[in-house]
Length: 515
Image (cartoon, rainbow, N blue to C red; front, top):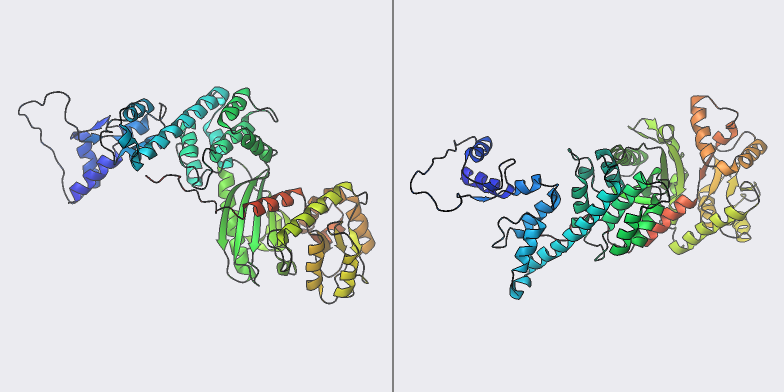
């Protein structure tokens, strides 16, 4: 029984370096013996009347086609072809586009309507897309391509990690075939998103900025991908990696998961979720898991992790700042090893009674105000403004939403939790003390005004340098006394993209066809 099972698996999977067809020969017996330990497979040669014509063989060797991945079909297409043709009669020996086309051309109308044959017809059309893309990419970038560049492009195009880090590296043809043949099941027909992203990543890595080779321009026009390609290239502009960590509470009192997004430029390339139990220690563990996940991707992409955005609900802002959380290996503060920017999650999950569109509009209004406002610095609230929730609401009611960044020099003695949310709903950017107050209010205001154009980066440097006890003249110590929830074009863009994806199915990487 074991012999039958192992032989059947060999015939289905093929044998490396065994030629076009599998026959009962020394190599097949050797493979069987390496798999079977309770029996001793053997063979005998029949020396009777010779068989006319070609020698007898047991099955077509699918590995033979895989080994010819530099030909008309790559290894990915060969494996898919074998899977598609397996249930169909008369398909033995088909291992190229030409043989496949010849076989399809010989079928009658009745067989062409069979579901399995229709899948083969769709596969043949996809092979044409692959061949066209490979030809253009080889003509455009062939002399510059390396395994390292292919891996970097695949990582930026959203390929699965196991594909990116595979050894040996997949060829250009294999990667193009993977992009087309493993297209998401929710992708619109005719829109090969992963392929466009892969082409854009190669162009971004190899071509000069803002210069798209004419071959790619022509290919995009012919493929109907001009808009998608241009948009992706714009997203990758700069391509500084950024990890966004969202502490999601689903409207409850505890964080239930950490949602991680890895961005290159403004392009969200990879996402993952990490469940979280109640408590700061569990949150730190989930954040650390997300950090390690991002590092595995960035290592494959040949990049380092520097910038980390941490988005938290209001109740977490009342605790210590995220850059002080001991996330890294459960011991090290996150802000020591990475440049941490704290974000308010209200533009992802608004507070009760506030719509998402309303908050996104406030964020957009704030960006407009920051671009046009002559005043350098936030609008500082004094003790009278913060004497009560009612007093604060009176101040906010007389100021345009998103019209400024609010600043608090000293925390009120009570009700700051309520005030904090009202301030962030009015404007999703706030400056306030790391502890209860700051030693020198006037010096703090002057320092913030002086370095306004370089916030929050200067706050990051101040925090890190204070820990090192090496504050220099370029970073006043007063900046290390304050913290922020910050809003900028990066965060506005991320939140708007998330809002636009809310009605689309999750990012399943499911093959569009299941043969």
